[in-house]
Image 1 (cartoon, rainbow, N blue to C red):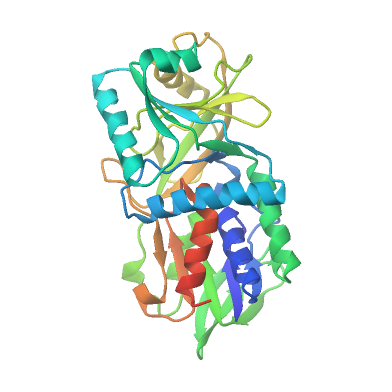
Image 2 (cartoon, helix red, strand yellow):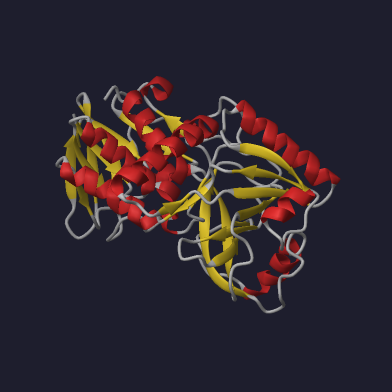
Length: 364
């Protein structure tokens, strides 16, 4: 088939690669001038193990399978990564019950390498930590997300696929048994293809509404949840990632490490109505309060604004977190069309598994 994938983020590139490896002719249409310039460039770069998500959900299935696939891909393609592990910590009885539930959910999801630690056992691993107990996830890691995208792009191009930059898709129309994709930019084009995959991240809903014959009532709402990150001056206080018990809309203000060993904190959850990537320095006050619950030794003045990202959520404040939405022909009845909505965390971890799912939905 001739297939057009919209969006050159991590998930779009993984899908294009999977389709290319199956022998299809693949073009990726990307609105910007480079890969990963949207959601993919503004995340924690964490490889998640898969213990947070309801059993049987797309998130659970793709995170666990995708994580195993991703570690193997990193090894075979030389993508920098580290299986550093993480501690999910509790600081009171209510949080203790929460992390016990996370541990049980992880076991139900088939996550390897989980163990429950007492406060003393956790402190033996991380002397700067204050907690009443913790879950140790040995399979959690970190990755160079840009190197991952370059490797996915390399595989795609090696089998003849290509990326068309500065090609924003404006409309998708039926053409016989296939589709015509109308791309804008400096050189407008109409591209006839057999199948289209909408992996446009924050733009996925708008593209679905611009798809001829796709039922507009089926397009889910887009809820923007901004996540702010703060860097930390000084040498790292931890060797594992440190996560508190989850909060509404996210996994709590956690400690992440990059491959250079630098420590940063975030993301928090700030519900917004537009894309805004400025980090308000005043939010540091809430970061200090949150972090000092599990790291009392955080020095005054140590936090500096770093960067922010926007999560493309499908649910808002006070609502149960939605699953990934992958809408293929079986869901909407239109051959050769897949829309992906709400692909936020653990989208990076899940990318290779999501790619296989999309290929199967297309019968590819």
